[in-house]
Image (cartoon, rainbow, N blue to C red; front, side, top):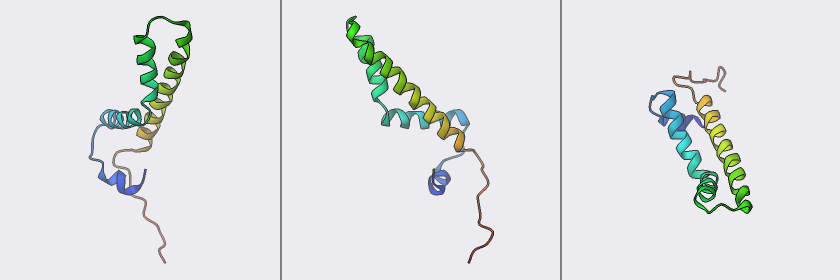
Length: 86
């Protein structure tokens, strides 16, 4: 995440930051939850197993990405200032 975007984030709890990041990841990776909704709303059909497994896989990846981004955006992280500037 660039320094400009990190500075624009308001100081919030880690969980709230995670929820915001998770929402954005789901916007970009909405396919996983859509596959799960299709699987559970469709009549029982053995040929729909792919929607269940791909939906779980994509949703899992979305959650792991959001956790990774949340972990990399620490609150009150010290600014990195170069020691030598020419």
